[in-house]
Length: 217
Image 1 (cartoon, rainbow, N blue to C red):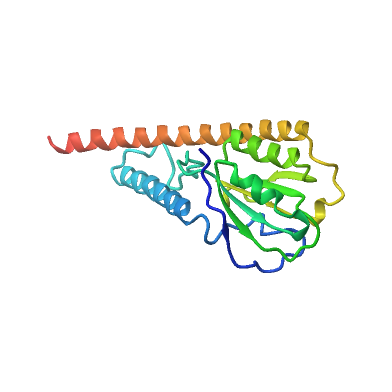
Image 2 (cartoon, rainbow, N blue to C red):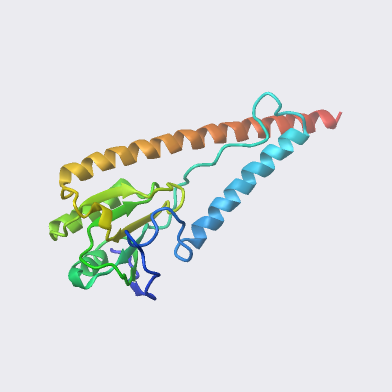
């Protein structure tokens, strides 16, 4: 059963070249994940800090732990769509049939939608569903890419217009397949980083427990 919540919101500030800001975090759509990420970072810092105080992590890690990377979100990806009059209702109708939550925003850019930006945490099957839906409806997509800052909109898909991509070749199923392969590689890299941090946390916990045991005697 499809999961969606198509909502009309206020028109955004004018953009020079692209809808939205492919480099900046979303200010209202993704507050919950921001809190989750902050909580996770705090947990890591607190644990490593305790280990340093216990003088048990000197050989295992420094005082500035790495970023925790992505985490699997139980929340379906959010699609932010900057609607144009040239698009009609085709993309809105397509989004209603997907297993995503969607927000429709206005746009000051002319012409139809031609670009899609993908967050690094979005499942590959959702990427395939959304892009296939656009291509099947003959939406002339000329760019598919990750956000400039991969940590800014991790579980978000953005559909809109990119003037700088207006002369690009049309995105095809082959283009999408290549992007999904790159996307999977990025997720694999993040997963490896996350596992390394989990291992360091486990070492910290073990060292702290040993220190506490020694203090009992």
